[in-house]
Image 1 (cartoon, helix red, strand yellow):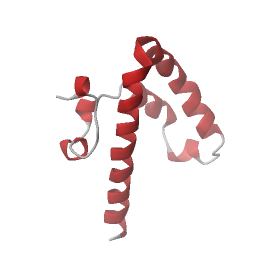
Image 2 (tube, one colour):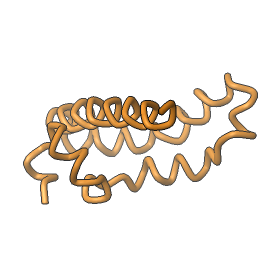
Image 3 (cartoon, helix red, strand yellow):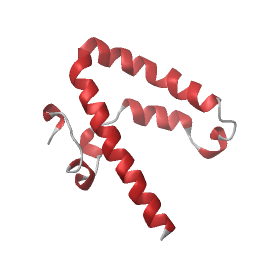
Image 4 (cartoon, one colour):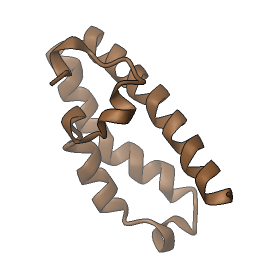
Length: 91
């Protein structure tokens, strides 16, 4: 029961955050996209540097790579149907 509820909550967070990311991408343009990509690594590292246990719990370099290569096409259709995604990202 606990794991099911945890997964349910994480899916709700993902649905909400995907919508936020999609909306922002509509307004920042190509220069903003490039700037955002350049900020991914330093922001991830800075955030996790403040959590001493992070290096034992997460593969931070892998998280950075996944953040840089994120593609809406890799998200499950069940989550996409519940979230707002920019029209140019829909398959």
